[in-house]
Image (cartoon, rainbow, N blue to C red; front, side, top):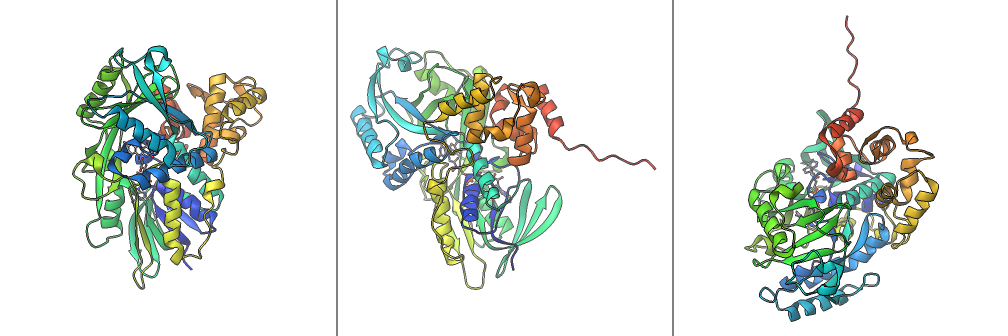
Amino acid sequence: MADFDLAIIGGGINGAGIARDAAGRGLRVLLVEQGDLASGTSSASTKLIHGGLRYLEHGAFLLVREALKEREVLLRNAPHIIRPLRFLLPPQPEMRSPLLVRIGLFIYDHLGGRRILPPTQTVDLTHNPLGVPLKRSYRSGFLYSDCRVDDARLVILNALDAAERGASIRTRTKCVRAERSEEWCLILNARGKRQVITARALVNAAGPWVGVVSETVIRMPGPPRVRLVKGSHIVVKKLFDHDSGYIFQNPDRRVVFALPYERDYTLIGTTDENFQGDPAGVGPSGAEIAYLCNTATRYFRQPVAPADIVHAFAGVRSLYDDGSKRPEDVTRDYHLAFDKSYGNAPLLSVYGGKITTYRRLAEAAMKKLSDVFTPSRPWTARVPLPGGDFPYNGVEAQIAQALRKWPFLEEAHAGRLVRAYGTRIGDVLGDADSYAALGTRFGADLTEAEVRYLMTKEFAVDADDVLWRRSKLGLRFADMERAALQRFMSPLPALKLVT
Ligand code: FAD
Protein backbone atom coordinates (compact mmCIF):
# COMPACT_ATOMS: atom_id res chain seq x y z
CA MET A 1 0.00 0.00 0.00
CA ALA A 2 1.24 3.53 -0.82
CA ASP A 3 2.40 5.63 2.14
CA PHE A 4 -0.19 8.33 1.35
CA ASP A 5 -3.38 8.65 -0.68
CA LEU A 6 -2.57 12.17 -1.83
CA ALA A 7 0.75 14.00 -2.02
CA ILE A 8 0.70 17.75 -2.60
CA ILE A 9 3.67 19.81 -3.80
CA GLY A 10 3.37 23.41 -2.55
CA GLY A 11 2.37 24.98 0.76
CA GLY A 12 0.68 28.10 -0.59
CA ILE A 13 -3.03 28.75 -0.26
CA ASN A 14 -3.97 26.25 -2.96
CA GLY A 15 -1.86 23.38 -1.62
CA ALA A 16 -2.90 24.04 1.98
CA GLY A 17 -6.58 24.40 1.00
CA ILE A 18 -6.54 21.09 -0.89
CA ALA A 19 -4.69 19.39 2.00
CA ARG A 20 -7.36 20.54 4.47
CA ASP A 21 -10.26 19.53 2.27
CA ALA A 22 -8.76 16.11 1.47
CA ALA A 23 -7.76 15.36 5.08
CA GLY A 24 -11.27 16.25 6.23
CA ARG A 25 -12.61 13.65 3.79
CA GLY A 26 -10.50 10.98 5.45
CA LEU A 27 -7.63 10.80 2.94
CA ARG A 28 -4.06 10.23 4.10
CA VAL A 29 -2.43 13.46 2.94
CA LEU A 30 1.16 14.64 2.66
CA LEU A 31 1.98 18.27 1.86
CA VAL A 32 5.57 19.25 1.07
CA GLU A 33 6.74 22.84 0.98
CA GLN A 34 10.30 23.72 -0.03
CA GLY A 35 10.45 26.80 2.23
CA ASP A 36 7.97 28.05 4.79
CA LEU A 37 4.20 27.84 4.37
CA ALA A 38 3.03 30.89 2.37
CA SER A 39 6.59 31.84 1.48
CA GLY A 40 5.60 32.12 -2.22
CA THR A 41 2.83 34.23 -3.76
CA SER A 42 0.37 33.60 -0.94
CA SER A 43 2.03 36.12 1.37
CA ALA A 44 2.56 38.72 -1.37
CA SER A 45 -1.02 39.42 -2.42
CA THR A 46 -3.06 42.61 -2.00
CA LYS A 47 -4.78 40.72 0.83
CA LEU A 48 -8.30 41.15 -0.49
CA ILE A 49 -11.16 38.73 -0.40
CA HIS A 50 -12.91 40.31 -3.32
CA GLY A 51 -14.99 39.66 -6.38
CA GLY A 52 -12.55 41.67 -8.48
CA LEU A 53 -14.49 44.71 -9.68
CA ARG A 54 -12.24 45.26 -12.67
CA TYR A 55 -12.74 41.70 -13.97
CA LEU A 56 -16.33 42.74 -14.80
CA GLU A 57 -14.81 44.86 -17.57
CA HIS A 58 -13.39 41.67 -19.04
CA GLY A 59 -16.83 40.04 -18.93
CA ALA A 60 -15.59 37.48 -16.36
CA PHE A 61 -19.03 37.29 -14.72
CA LEU A 62 -18.76 33.68 -13.58
CA LEU A 63 -15.38 34.27 -11.92
CA VAL A 64 -16.63 37.46 -10.23
CA ARG A 65 -19.83 35.74 -9.10
CA GLU A 66 -18.01 32.78 -7.57
CA ALA A 67 -15.57 35.11 -5.79
CA LEU A 68 -18.31 37.45 -4.54
CA LYS A 69 -20.25 34.53 -3.09
CA GLU A 70 -17.13 33.24 -1.42
CA ARG A 71 -16.49 36.51 0.46
CA GLU A 72 -19.16 35.91 3.05
CA VAL A 73 -18.50 32.15 3.31
CA LEU A 74 -14.88 32.90 4.23
CA LEU A 75 -15.81 35.81 6.49
CA ARG A 76 -18.05 33.49 8.52
CA ASN A 77 -15.37 30.79 8.70
CA ALA A 78 -12.46 33.02 9.65
CA PRO A 79 -13.82 36.22 11.24
CA HIS A 80 -10.55 36.71 13.14
CA ILE A 81 -8.34 37.07 10.06
CA ILE A 82 -10.93 38.35 7.58
CA ARG A 83 -12.88 41.57 7.97
CA PRO A 84 -15.19 43.69 5.85
CA LEU A 85 -13.62 46.70 4.18
CA ARG A 86 -15.29 49.67 2.46
CA PHE A 87 -13.54 51.04 -0.63
CA LEU A 88 -13.80 54.55 -1.94
CA LEU A 89 -13.65 54.86 -5.72
CA PRO A 90 -13.28 58.49 -6.85
CA PRO A 91 -14.74 58.75 -10.38
CA GLN A 92 -12.40 59.87 -13.17
CA PRO A 93 -14.66 60.74 -16.12
CA GLU A 94 -11.71 60.93 -18.54
CA MET A 95 -10.80 57.30 -17.69
CA ARG A 96 -14.21 55.63 -17.20
CA SER A 97 -17.72 57.04 -17.41
CA PRO A 98 -19.08 57.47 -13.84
CA LEU A 99 -22.41 56.06 -15.04
CA LEU A 100 -20.67 52.92 -16.29
CA VAL A 101 -18.80 52.60 -12.98
CA ARG A 102 -22.09 52.96 -11.05
CA ILE A 103 -23.71 50.26 -13.23
CA GLY A 104 -20.68 48.02 -12.62
CA LEU A 105 -21.05 48.54 -8.87
CA PHE A 106 -24.78 47.78 -9.06
CA ILE A 107 -23.94 44.47 -10.74
CA TYR A 108 -21.19 43.87 -8.16
CA ASP A 109 -23.69 44.44 -5.35
CA HIS A 110 -26.25 42.02 -6.78
CA LEU A 111 -24.26 39.27 -8.50
CA GLY A 112 -22.99 37.35 -5.51
CA GLY A 113 -25.71 36.83 -2.90
CA ARG A 114 -24.53 39.58 -0.52
CA ARG A 115 -26.14 39.33 2.95
CA ILE A 116 -23.66 40.79 5.42
CA LEU A 117 -21.72 43.42 3.51
CA PRO A 118 -23.39 46.83 3.01
CA PRO A 119 -24.25 47.96 -0.55
CA THR A 120 -22.65 50.74 -2.59
CA GLN A 121 -23.43 54.35 -1.75
CA THR A 122 -22.40 57.68 -3.21
CA VAL A 123 -20.57 59.94 -0.77
CA ASP A 124 -19.98 63.66 -0.72
CA LEU A 125 -16.25 63.92 -0.07
CA THR A 126 -16.42 67.58 0.91
CA HIS A 127 -18.11 66.52 4.19
CA ASN A 128 -16.67 63.09 4.85
CA PRO A 129 -13.47 61.92 6.61
CA LEU A 130 -12.76 59.80 3.50
CA GLY A 131 -12.24 63.02 1.54
CA VAL A 132 -9.73 64.49 4.02
CA PRO A 133 -6.53 62.79 2.73
CA LEU A 134 -7.50 63.28 -0.94
CA LYS A 135 -6.78 66.28 -3.15
CA ARG A 136 -9.53 68.88 -3.12
CA SER A 137 -10.56 68.15 -6.72
CA TYR A 138 -12.12 64.82 -5.60
CA ARG A 139 -15.53 65.99 -4.43
CA SER A 140 -17.56 62.76 -4.50
CA GLY A 141 -17.01 59.05 -4.76
CA PHE A 142 -18.59 55.60 -4.71
CA LEU A 143 -18.21 53.56 -1.55
CA TYR A 144 -18.52 49.78 -2.02
CA SER A 145 -17.76 46.61 -0.02
CA ASP A 146 -15.25 43.78 -0.12
CA CYS A 147 -13.13 42.10 2.57
CA ARG A 148 -9.48 42.00 3.55
CA VAL A 149 -7.54 39.04 4.89
CA ASP A 150 -4.23 38.16 6.46
CA ASP A 151 -3.24 36.07 3.43
CA ALA A 152 -0.33 34.16 5.00
CA ARG A 153 -2.32 33.32 8.13
CA LEU A 154 -5.10 31.95 5.95
CA VAL A 155 -2.56 29.49 4.53
CA ILE A 156 -1.24 28.59 7.96
CA LEU A 157 -4.70 28.02 9.42
CA ASN A 158 -5.57 25.72 6.52
CA ALA A 159 -2.35 23.76 7.04
CA LEU A 160 -2.95 23.62 10.80
CA ASP A 161 -6.48 22.35 10.32
CA ALA A 162 -5.25 19.79 7.77
CA ALA A 163 -2.65 18.59 10.30
CA GLU A 164 -5.28 18.35 13.03
CA ARG A 165 -7.29 16.16 10.65
CA GLY A 166 -4.32 13.84 10.17
CA ALA A 167 -2.33 15.36 7.28
CA SER A 168 1.45 15.36 7.38
CA ILE A 169 2.69 18.92 6.74
CA ARG A 170 6.41 19.07 5.98
CA THR A 171 8.02 22.46 5.50
CA ARG A 172 11.62 22.96 4.32
CA THR A 173 11.02 19.84 2.22
CA LYS A 174 11.53 20.10 -1.51
CA CYS A 175 10.20 17.54 -3.95
CA VAL A 176 13.13 17.00 -6.30
CA ARG A 177 11.82 14.10 -8.37
CA ALA A 178 8.46 12.41 -8.93
CA GLU A 179 8.56 9.00 -10.61
CA ARG A 180 5.27 7.83 -12.02
CA SER A 181 4.00 4.27 -12.33
CA GLU A 182 0.82 2.79 -10.81
CA GLU A 183 1.64 5.01 -7.86
CA TRP A 184 3.87 8.03 -7.38
CA CYS A 185 7.32 7.71 -5.87
CA LEU A 186 8.56 11.08 -4.63
CA ILE A 187 12.16 11.90 -3.78
CA LEU A 188 12.24 14.61 -1.15
CA ASN A 189 15.06 16.78 0.10
CA ALA A 190 14.27 17.67 3.71
CA ARG A 191 16.99 20.11 4.84
CA GLY A 192 19.66 18.03 3.14
CA LYS A 193 18.20 14.64 4.09
CA ARG A 194 16.88 12.41 1.30
CA GLN A 195 13.47 10.87 1.87
CA VAL A 196 11.39 8.63 -0.39
CA ILE A 197 7.63 8.33 -0.11
CA THR A 198 4.87 6.85 -2.25
CA ALA A 199 1.39 8.20 -2.94
CA ARG A 200 -1.64 7.14 -4.96
CA ALA A 201 -2.18 10.59 -6.50
CA LEU A 202 -0.15 13.80 -6.85
CA VAL A 203 -1.15 17.46 -6.87
CA ASN A 204 1.22 20.03 -8.37
CA ALA A 205 0.23 23.20 -6.47
CA ALA A 206 3.62 24.86 -6.84
CA GLY A 207 2.16 28.25 -7.84
CA PRO A 208 4.70 30.17 -9.94
CA TRP A 209 6.90 27.06 -9.93
CA VAL A 210 4.11 24.90 -11.44
CA GLY A 211 5.90 24.87 -14.81
CA VAL A 212 9.34 24.14 -13.31
CA VAL A 213 7.91 21.26 -11.26
CA SER A 214 6.07 19.93 -14.30
CA GLU A 215 9.18 20.05 -16.50
CA THR A 216 12.01 19.15 -14.13
CA VAL A 217 10.47 17.23 -11.20
CA ILE A 218 7.63 15.30 -12.87
CA ARG A 219 9.21 15.52 -16.33
CA MET A 220 5.95 15.83 -18.21
CA PRO A 221 6.23 15.92 -22.00
CA GLY A 222 5.38 19.27 -23.61
CA PRO A 223 5.65 22.80 -22.23
CA PRO A 224 3.19 23.79 -19.49
CA ARG A 225 0.59 26.47 -20.41
CA VAL A 226 1.60 28.94 -17.77
CA ARG A 227 2.02 32.69 -17.86
CA LEU A 228 3.92 34.38 -15.02
CA VAL A 229 2.86 37.90 -14.04
CA LYS A 230 4.60 39.85 -11.31
CA GLY A 231 2.92 42.35 -9.00
CA SER A 232 4.52 44.64 -6.40
CA HIS A 233 3.36 46.54 -3.32
CA ILE A 234 4.81 49.29 -1.16
CA VAL A 235 4.10 50.02 2.51
CA VAL A 236 4.34 53.58 3.87
CA LYS A 237 3.47 55.20 7.21
CA LYS A 238 -0.30 55.64 7.29
CA LEU A 239 -1.68 58.27 4.93
CA PHE A 240 -5.14 58.39 6.53
CA ASP A 241 -6.77 57.78 9.88
CA HIS A 242 -9.92 55.85 9.05
CA ASP A 243 -10.54 52.18 8.37
CA SER A 244 -11.62 52.24 4.70
CA GLY A 245 -9.53 51.72 1.59
CA TYR A 246 -9.20 53.50 -1.74
CA ILE A 247 -9.27 52.18 -5.29
CA PHE A 248 -7.62 54.56 -7.74
CA GLN A 249 -7.93 54.51 -11.51
CA ASN A 250 -4.83 55.09 -13.57
CA PRO A 251 -4.52 56.54 -17.09
CA ASP A 252 -3.30 53.09 -18.28
CA ARG A 253 -6.79 51.80 -17.21
CA ARG A 254 -5.30 49.75 -14.38
CA VAL A 255 -6.46 50.23 -10.78
CA VAL A 256 -4.28 50.59 -7.68
CA PHE A 257 -5.41 50.05 -4.09
CA ALA A 258 -4.37 52.07 -1.03
CA LEU A 259 -5.42 50.16 2.08
CA PRO A 260 -5.21 50.55 5.84
CA TYR A 261 -2.51 48.11 6.93
CA GLU A 262 -1.36 46.83 10.31
CA ARG A 263 -2.83 49.78 12.24
CA ASP A 264 -0.04 52.28 11.49
CA TYR A 265 0.60 51.82 7.77
CA THR A 266 -0.87 52.12 4.27
CA LEU A 267 -0.40 49.33 1.72
CA ILE A 268 -0.29 50.47 -1.93
CA GLY A 269 -0.44 48.09 -4.88
CA THR A 270 -0.27 46.49 -7.28
CA THR A 271 1.52 46.44 -10.61
CA ASP A 272 1.24 43.85 -13.41
CA GLU A 273 4.39 42.89 -15.34
CA ASN A 274 5.26 39.87 -17.43
CA PHE A 275 7.84 37.84 -15.54
CA GLN A 276 10.57 35.40 -16.46
CA GLY A 277 13.14 33.80 -14.20
CA ASP A 278 13.16 32.36 -10.70
CA PRO A 279 10.15 33.53 -8.63
CA ALA A 280 12.22 33.00 -5.46
CA GLY A 281 14.32 36.10 -6.06
CA VAL A 282 11.49 38.42 -7.03
CA GLY A 283 11.41 42.01 -5.78
CA PRO A 284 9.85 45.33 -6.82
CA SER A 285 11.73 47.18 -9.58
CA GLY A 286 12.49 50.91 -9.49
CA ALA A 287 9.94 51.45 -12.26
CA GLU A 288 7.20 49.68 -10.26
CA ILE A 289 8.01 51.70 -7.16
CA ALA A 290 7.85 54.93 -9.17
CA TYR A 291 4.52 53.85 -10.71
CA LEU A 292 2.96 53.18 -7.29
CA CYS A 293 4.33 56.41 -5.76
CA ASN A 294 3.06 58.44 -8.73
CA THR A 295 -0.40 56.90 -8.52
CA ALA A 296 -0.69 57.62 -4.80
CA THR A 297 0.60 61.17 -5.33
CA ARG A 298 -1.98 61.76 -8.08
CA TYR A 299 -4.78 61.23 -5.52
CA PHE A 300 -3.47 62.00 -2.01
CA ARG A 301 -2.69 65.51 -0.79
CA GLN A 302 0.46 64.20 0.84
CA PRO A 303 2.91 63.18 -1.91
CA VAL A 304 4.39 59.68 -1.67
CA ALA A 305 8.07 59.29 -2.61
CA PRO A 306 10.38 56.25 -2.66
CA ALA A 307 12.06 57.61 0.51
CA ASP A 308 8.75 57.16 2.40
CA ILE A 309 8.69 53.40 1.81
CA VAL A 310 9.17 51.32 4.95
CA HIS A 311 8.69 47.95 3.26
CA ALA A 312 8.07 46.63 -0.25
CA PHE A 313 7.37 43.20 -1.65
CA ALA A 314 6.56 41.45 -4.90
CA GLY A 315 4.84 38.22 -5.85
CA VAL A 316 4.33 36.22 -9.03
CA ARG A 317 1.00 34.91 -10.23
CA SER A 318 1.00 31.71 -12.24
CA LEU A 319 -1.86 32.24 -14.63
CA TYR A 320 -3.29 29.81 -17.11
CA ASP A 321 -2.06 31.10 -20.47
CA ASP A 322 -5.17 32.11 -22.41
CA GLY A 323 -3.18 33.92 -25.10
CA SER A 324 -3.97 37.48 -23.87
CA LYS A 325 -1.45 40.13 -24.92
CA ARG A 326 -1.44 42.40 -21.85
CA PRO A 327 -0.57 40.82 -18.45
CA GLU A 328 -3.55 42.49 -16.75
CA ASP A 329 -5.90 40.87 -19.29
CA VAL A 330 -4.88 37.24 -18.64
CA THR A 331 -7.68 35.32 -16.92
CA ARG A 332 -7.50 35.21 -13.10
CA ASP A 333 -9.72 32.14 -13.09
CA TYR A 334 -8.16 28.87 -11.99
CA HIS A 335 -7.61 25.94 -14.23
CA LEU A 336 -7.18 22.35 -13.01
CA ALA A 337 -5.44 20.02 -15.44
CA PHE A 338 -6.22 16.40 -14.57
CA ASP A 339 -4.08 13.72 -16.15
CA LYS A 340 -4.94 10.08 -15.62
CA SER A 341 -3.76 7.84 -18.39
CA TYR A 342 -4.16 4.08 -18.19
CA GLY A 343 -1.75 2.38 -15.78
CA ASN A 344 -0.44 5.70 -14.51
CA ALA A 345 -1.08 7.26 -11.12
CA PRO A 346 -3.18 10.44 -11.45
CA LEU A 347 -1.74 13.95 -11.54
CA LEU A 348 -3.61 17.19 -10.91
CA SER A 349 -1.90 20.48 -11.82
CA VAL A 350 -3.19 23.78 -10.45
CA TYR A 351 -2.91 26.95 -12.56
CA GLY A 352 -3.93 30.44 -11.49
CA GLY A 353 -6.59 31.11 -8.91
CA LYS A 354 -7.01 33.74 -6.24
CA ILE A 355 -6.74 33.71 -2.47
CA THR A 356 -10.49 34.43 -2.54
CA THR A 357 -11.43 31.27 -4.44
CA TYR A 358 -8.98 28.81 -2.85
CA ARG A 359 -11.73 26.90 -0.99
CA ARG A 360 -13.80 26.46 -4.17
CA LEU A 361 -10.63 25.45 -6.02
CA ALA A 362 -9.99 22.77 -3.38
CA GLU A 363 -13.55 21.49 -3.78
CA ALA A 364 -13.11 21.38 -7.55
CA ALA A 365 -9.81 19.52 -7.10
CA MET A 366 -11.51 16.91 -4.91
CA LYS A 367 -14.23 16.52 -7.52
CA LYS A 368 -11.61 15.84 -10.20
CA LEU A 369 -10.04 13.25 -7.90
CA SER A 370 -13.35 11.56 -7.14
CA ASP A 371 -12.55 9.00 -9.86
CA VAL A 372 -9.59 7.87 -7.81
CA PHE A 373 -10.91 8.10 -4.26
CA THR A 374 -14.34 7.18 -2.95
CA PRO A 375 -16.54 10.23 -3.71
CA SER A 376 -17.36 12.30 -0.64
CA ARG A 377 -19.35 15.42 0.13
CA PRO A 378 -17.92 18.94 0.23
CA TRP A 379 -17.67 20.08 3.85
CA THR A 380 -15.48 23.18 4.16
CA ALA A 381 -18.18 25.84 3.52
CA ARG A 382 -19.59 25.53 7.02
CA VAL A 383 -16.63 24.55 9.19
CA PRO A 384 -14.63 27.40 10.73
CA LEU A 385 -10.88 27.54 10.45
CA PRO A 386 -8.93 27.16 13.72
CA GLY A 387 -9.86 30.00 16.07
CA GLY A 388 -12.68 31.20 13.82
CA ASP A 389 -15.54 29.64 15.79
CA PHE A 390 -17.29 32.87 16.75
CA PRO A 391 -19.79 35.15 14.94
CA TYR A 392 -18.52 37.13 11.94
CA ASN A 393 -19.15 40.42 13.78
CA GLY A 394 -17.81 39.22 17.13
CA VAL A 395 -14.18 40.41 17.08
CA GLU A 396 -14.76 43.31 19.46
CA ALA A 397 -16.55 40.97 21.91
CA GLN A 398 -13.61 38.54 21.68
CA ILE A 399 -11.17 41.37 22.44
CA ALA A 400 -13.27 42.53 25.43
CA GLN A 401 -13.37 38.95 26.71
CA ALA A 402 -9.58 38.62 26.34
CA LEU A 403 -9.05 41.85 28.27
CA ARG A 404 -11.25 40.52 31.08
CA LYS A 405 -9.37 37.24 31.20
CA TRP A 406 -5.85 38.71 30.84
CA PRO A 407 -6.33 42.23 32.31
CA PHE A 408 -2.61 43.02 32.13
CA LEU A 409 -2.72 43.02 28.28
CA GLU A 410 -2.48 46.32 26.44
CA GLU A 411 -5.60 46.83 24.32
CA ALA A 412 -3.72 46.92 21.00
CA HIS A 413 -1.89 43.72 21.95
CA ALA A 414 -5.15 41.94 22.80
CA GLY A 415 -6.55 43.16 19.47
CA ARG A 416 -3.59 41.80 17.52
CA LEU A 417 -3.75 38.42 19.27
CA VAL A 418 -7.51 38.04 18.73
CA ARG A 419 -7.14 38.98 15.06
CA ALA A 420 -4.43 36.36 14.68
CA TYR A 421 -5.61 33.47 16.88
CA GLY A 422 -9.32 34.10 17.48
CA THR A 423 -10.70 31.73 20.09
CA ARG A 424 -7.33 29.99 20.33
CA ILE A 425 -5.78 32.99 22.08
CA GLY A 426 -5.84 30.90 25.26
CA ASP A 427 -3.42 28.41 23.66
CA VAL A 428 -0.95 31.31 23.29
CA LEU A 429 -1.41 33.03 26.66
CA GLY A 430 -2.31 30.05 28.86
CA ASP A 431 -2.94 31.09 32.44
CA ALA A 432 -0.42 33.94 32.42
CA ASP A 433 -1.26 36.63 34.96
CA SER A 434 1.34 39.23 34.00
CA TYR A 435 3.60 40.22 31.12
CA ALA A 436 6.51 38.66 32.99
CA ALA A 437 4.74 35.28 32.83
CA LEU A 438 4.81 35.46 29.00
CA GLY A 439 8.62 35.34 29.01
CA THR A 440 11.11 37.36 26.97
CA ARG A 441 9.69 40.23 24.93
CA PHE A 442 11.64 40.15 21.64
CA GLY A 443 10.39 43.41 20.18
CA ALA A 444 7.05 45.19 19.59
CA ASP A 445 4.55 43.02 21.54
CA LEU A 446 6.01 39.63 20.56
CA THR A 447 6.58 37.44 23.60
CA GLU A 448 8.27 34.11 24.16
CA ALA A 449 4.88 32.47 24.88
CA GLU A 450 3.65 33.41 21.39
CA VAL A 451 6.86 32.28 19.70
CA ARG A 452 6.72 28.93 21.50
CA TYR A 453 3.10 28.50 20.37
CA LEU A 454 4.07 29.28 16.77
CA MET A 455 6.98 26.83 16.87
CA THR A 456 5.00 23.96 18.40
CA LYS A 457 1.65 24.42 16.64
CA GLU A 458 2.08 26.56 13.54
CA PHE A 459 5.22 25.09 11.92
CA ALA A 460 7.37 28.21 12.51
CA VAL A 461 11.09 27.47 12.22
CA ASP A 462 12.90 30.79 11.93
CA ALA A 463 12.50 34.48 12.72
CA ASP A 464 11.02 35.44 9.34
CA ASP A 465 8.37 32.72 9.64
CA VAL A 466 7.18 34.54 12.75
CA LEU A 467 7.81 38.15 11.68
CA TRP A 468 6.50 38.06 8.11
CA ARG A 469 4.09 35.14 7.75
CA ARG A 470 2.53 34.26 11.15
CA SER A 471 2.44 38.00 11.88
CA LYS A 472 3.59 41.20 10.19
CA LEU A 473 5.65 42.28 13.19
CA GLY A 474 8.65 42.49 10.86
CA LEU A 475 7.40 46.02 10.13
CA ARG A 476 8.15 46.96 13.74
CA PHE A 477 11.30 44.96 14.41
CA ALA A 478 14.84 46.36 14.39
CA ASP A 479 17.63 44.18 12.95
CA MET A 480 19.04 43.47 16.43
CA GLU A 481 15.65 42.36 17.73
CA ARG A 482 15.23 40.06 14.75
CA ALA A 483 18.69 38.58 15.35
CA ALA A 484 17.83 37.87 19.01
CA LEU A 485 14.61 36.15 17.95
CA GLN A 486 16.56 34.11 15.40
CA ARG A 487 19.04 33.01 18.09
CA PHE A 488 16.16 31.98 20.35
CA MET A 489 14.55 29.93 17.59
CA SER A 490 17.74 28.25 16.32
CA PRO A 491 18.28 24.78 17.72
CA LEU A 492 21.27 24.62 20.04
CA PRO A 493 24.36 23.39 18.14
CA ALA A 494 25.31 19.82 19.03
CA LEU A 495 28.12 19.66 21.62
CA LYS A 496 31.44 18.61 20.12
CA LEU A 497 33.20 16.00 22.21
CA VAL A 498 36.92 16.61 22.39
CA THR A 499 38.84 13.35 22.58
P1 FAD B 1 2.09 29.94 -3.88
O1 FAD B 1 1.57 30.69 -2.75
O2 FAD B 1 3.25 30.55 -4.61
O3 FAD B 1 2.52 28.52 -3.33
C1 FAD B 1 3.28 27.61 -4.08
C2 FAD B 1 4.31 26.99 -3.15
O4 FAD B 1 4.94 25.88 -3.79
C3 FAD B 1 5.43 27.95 -2.76
O5 FAD B 1 5.35 28.24 -1.37
C4 FAD B 1 6.71 27.21 -3.15
O6 FAD B 1 7.76 27.38 -2.23
C5 FAD B 1 6.23 25.76 -3.22
N1 FAD B 1 7.05 24.91 -4.11
C6 FAD B 1 7.43 25.19 -5.38
N2 FAD B 1 8.18 24.16 -5.86
C7 FAD B 1 8.26 23.22 -4.88
C8 FAD B 1 8.90 21.94 -4.78
N3 FAD B 1 9.61 21.41 -5.80
N4 FAD B 1 8.78 21.25 -3.62
C9 FAD B 1 8.08 21.77 -2.56
N5 FAD B 1 7.47 22.98 -2.62
C10 FAD B 1 7.54 23.69 -3.75
N6 FAD B 1 -5.77 36.92 -4.82
C11 FAD B 1 -6.82 37.37 -4.11
O7 FAD B 1 -7.80 36.66 -3.93
N7 FAD B 1 -6.85 38.62 -3.59
C12 FAD B 1 -5.85 39.50 -3.80
O8 FAD B 1 -5.89 40.62 -3.28
C13 FAD B 1 -4.74 39.08 -4.58
N8 FAD B 1 -3.74 39.94 -4.83
C14 FAD B 1 -2.64 39.51 -5.52
C15 FAD B 1 -1.61 40.41 -5.75
C16 FAD B 1 -0.45 39.98 -6.38
C17 FAD B 1 0.67 40.96 -6.64
C18 FAD B 1 -0.33 38.64 -6.79
C19 FAD B 1 0.94 38.17 -7.43
C20 FAD B 1 -1.37 37.75 -6.60
C21 FAD B 1 -2.54 38.18 -5.96
N9 FAD B 1 -3.62 37.32 -5.74
C22 FAD B 1 -4.72 37.74 -5.06
C23 FAD B 1 -3.57 35.93 -6.23
C24 FAD B 1 -3.09 34.99 -5.13
O9 FAD B 1 -2.09 35.59 -4.35
C25 FAD B 1 -2.53 33.71 -5.76
O10 FAD B 1 -3.47 33.19 -6.66
C26 FAD B 1 -2.24 32.64 -4.72
O11 FAD B 1 -1.48 33.14 -3.68
C27 FAD B 1 -1.53 31.47 -5.39
O12 FAD B 1 -1.31 30.49 -4.41
P2 FAD B 1 -0.56 29.15 -4.77
O13 FAD B 1 -0.74 28.25 -3.61
O14 FAD B 1 -1.00 28.65 -6.09
O15 FAD B 1 0.97 29.59 -4.97
